[in-house]
Length: 181
Image (tube, rainbow, N blue to C red; front, side, top):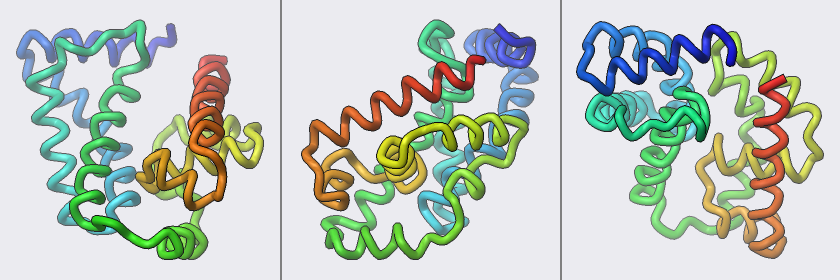
């Protein structure tokens, strides 16, 4: 386990016991990345800030539910944020037309990870994403940077649901192994 990861795990453990100073350090270390993700997914600063606040309230109250063997604290916090953003998107978009989804993905222009991840880990993630096959990379970007569900991705890509789920699962497995190197 890297020194940085070890420190983050310690901060989570102390936060779970109500240590405000550790929580503040955890927030300082992780909030820029999470805010970038929220802003990229939602495209609205006010909503991104609201989600960010809600996520860290959840982190404060549920830090004891974090398990280091399941992933890094950053991964845990980002997944909470991602699901919170997806909830906002579902409320906002209702049943958006598949063609609208395709167009919004096509017009994004900037690589999602460039906007969402402004940290030292960005270079590693860029390298690992670059090593993925196109379908795996696209499915991960659609799910984690655009907030699409597996069903929406399957319709957008015109592929079976099982195929899309497999791409995401295999892509995430590869990224986890690649980032651990």
